[in-house]
Image 1: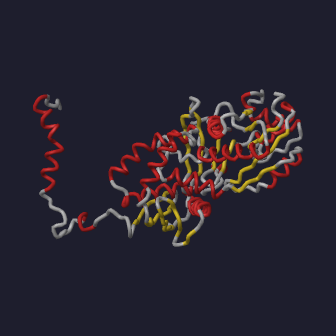
Image 2: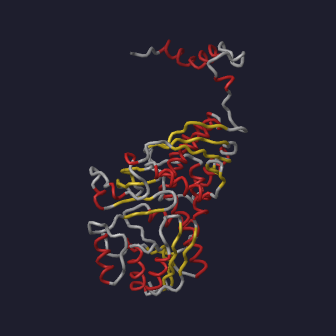
Length: 407
């Protein structure tokens, strides 16, 4: 341990990392540098600075990473229509590679010997943080307190905090340990407490970003979303920065009860775990992106993307953002978005986001003269379908003569 003199800690000021800060100082006798990322979690971050200063920290980094997060991580992921296990929009997963990147940059800047994080030994985040860190600095030392100490429950953490005079925020109003929560501009997640019983419904008071669909407005609201090369650039005709767009969609989606998810997922480390998520803006983005692709992407390109998407989603979920295979897939995905330009109209109503209109003046592959049920003036020859069908049926007709199908 003596070779570690300075550690950069991914620090939120919450229960886990506040305890870790004190533990690192006592256990390693090392100087701790704190790094707090502003990813749009909607919390005032200056209290984290005050808590770090009170703990004797001299080098405190609080970085506004909102635009970089959405522009360089969220948007590229959404170009692939990425969903893990059919439901999860990867709100936690996609933030980890950016945090790892900044941890490594700060370690280099401050000449630190190691980095540290608050991910538990049971979760995915330890893998995500560390795979990213090793990809960016193969020689970095990593301290993962949850794999070293005996404070293996949130109740024990709270006892430790009280013993050492560490303030604990966000205690559950009924007492006991708080939810384990993670928030950024894309989502907020909840784990722990009664959610550990997958048969129990989440309490309504837990949700922070959205109203329940039952309490949402009785009138629908429409939003026009403009795309350029697969990324959203404007809402209702107003051009904004990437993080501003996602923030506005969060407000709209939350107002209409959109984006709640109660999920039991398969963690990379092998266990099943239950989490609840609110992803209002991301849910709208996903619907809109598929809507604009429906008229601008070639059929086989769209189907190829759908084939590749589960593998791409797993790479992000499991922490391989900086891997060569994810980067290679991203190049293909980005190439497919060159003509994904136009606008989509989405209807927001009581928990649902529905595409009700879409158009592209420059890249639409929808030809109304061919698709019409009315007289197409010879644009499409129905007789062509006969040969098409027979050729596609040829292999089955040959096989049926040799090996009739038993019905």
